[in-house]
Image (cartoon, rainbow, N blue to C red; front, side, top):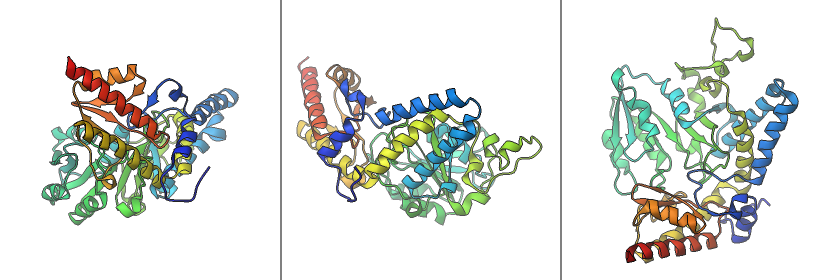
Length: 392
């Protein structure tokens, strides 16, 4: 079904992909930014994981599991424009950032810069180090975005690292990462970018972005479920990266089982920790294969169309939109300021729509398998619920 074009995925393609997700038999799913739905191919992959475990027992490690983990690294590398040896795996963004953080020397540069609208996991990694002299300094947002000048004002010679998002979880705004990376590097700092809301929703090229580290995972837009994240390390930095937290998967001689020596491999695997969640590699590869087939550029164009419908309808109804109106600055998330967002999400669920809420907002996130009818019917339901709340 692969089409060699940069045009958006059309309605017929979307309907064919939609049929791959059994959840649509029960609800109209518009919540991919929280948890990507399980596809038929991912469910089959999960069954294969169980079959391999059952058939092989411990030999499954070298007969099936390690090859599948390597396949997951290769898929993620393709999705972000990296080489496989620049990518390793972790368990969550928290553990991935912990591995990255352990490589940063704060003796002369005690400051880490984040944005005030980053997901809390990002600054928490360094706020937890405040008793050891690490300071988090924040670039301040203006509406749904953080102006580059805000980063410029806080990146100084005392900054060791800029740690921020590619796409903000709370607004869907795409950051100008290359400009931020240039500011960091000009000051002698490194940059790590959380791409959880980017990979699978928008095209990503870590080389063009010139980032030092990039993390992401399969939970959301890659439709692989929880338990598998990735760490990219720029090739030129790999030999310089010396983590101070580790595990047996980080050893260059992993199966030598030598407790007297830890030698790191010349790859990003030096940032790996302990035994990975293998089942998530099976489902993750299935999800990433679907995204690669659909093509990230075409997915993004589709999301621009679908989120554009939501925004147009929202503006007509008088809802405040806390997401970029310019489609080139917007990922797959739209935040709508409505009355009683928590109750509204529950009422939407009763009408057959799955979305979620964040303080003061309903958050809707269609994916490439959603149709225009999905979002039009969602907006019809939202309007009806809001009118009923207004009448109370």
